[in-house]
Amino acid sequence: MKLRVFTAFSGYDSQCMALQRIAERHPDFEFELVGWSEIERNAIAAHDAVFPQWRDRNYGDICEIDWTKVPDFDLFTYSSPCQDFSLAGVQRGGQEGSGTRSSLLWECRRAILAKRPRFLLLENVSNLVSEKFIKTFSKWEQELASYGYDNYYKVLNAKDYGVPQNRERVFLVSFLHSQIFNFPKPVPLELRLKDVLEDKVAERYYLSEKAIAGLLEHNEKHEARGTGFLFKPKDISVNGGGYANCIATKPGYETGTYILCSDHPSGETEQLAEQRHRGSGRNLSDNLQRRKGRNAENR
Image (cartoon, rainbow, N blue to C red):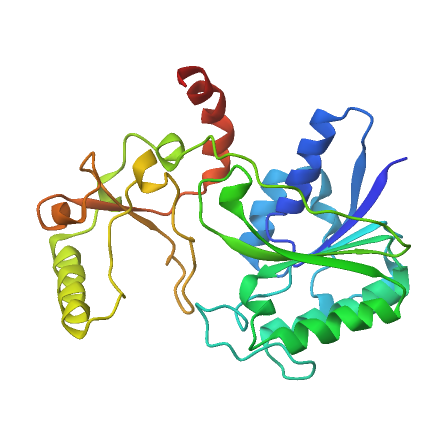
C-alpha cells in the first residue's frame, strides 16, 4: 500500500528526501507526495529541482488552502516557521492569533481536522520545548490528543544520527490510533566535517583581513569582560569533535549561514591572526552522499 504524503512549510522537502532513502533501502515501501505547501520562491525553485515530478502539486499559502479540494493523505508533516521560537530570532513566540510567523502552526489544525491523517510529524527548534515556550507546545499537544492522537516528542541532535553538525531539533510524532513508538537510538558518528567540506575553496569564501581584525577585536572585548561569546575557528579534526556548530540563519540576512574553520591543520585559535579563514555556506547534503563511500573506504 502506497503511503500518501502532504508536506506543509515544505522548503526543499527533506521529509521526502528521507522517504526516498527508506524506499531505496526497502523496495516494498512506496510513497507519493499528493501535495505540498510553500510560498518562498527560492524554496519552491529548490523543491522543483529536487522533485520535478511534483512541481504542479504546490498548494501555496497554507492559510488559503481549501482542504476539501486536496487529495486524502496518510502522513502530514509540518515543520512550521521557527523564527519566533529560535534563540537566533527575537522570540516573539507562536501563540494562536499573535500574527507571528511561528503562529502559522495553528493553521495546521484545518488540515488535520479535514483529512484526519494517520500520522503527523512536527519538527522545530528545540527552544519550542524550553521553559519560555513549553506552554504553547503543550497546548498544541493537548489539542492533538483531543482529536484522538497519541503523541511522542523528543529533542534529537543531528550529530547523533550520522550528520556532522551539532543541531538540536524537537520532533513530535503523532498517531491517530494507539501505537507504541520509540525514537531511534543514537549511532556513532562516522562522517566528520572534514569529509564533507570541499578541498578547493573559491577565494570569495575567505574572510578579509578586515573581517579577521573585527573578530579579534570582538574576542578581546569579551575576554576583558570575562564572557564566553568568542568567535573561534572550528577544529574540524576528530580531536575537535569533527562536526560543525549549529548552522543558523540570521534574521534580515539572505546569506548569513557559514562555518568558520581554519586552513591551519590543527584549527588552533592562536592561528586566527596568522592564517586566512574561510566561511563555508554550502549545502552539506550532496557532499554527504557523494563522499560517504569514498571516506568509508579510506577509513
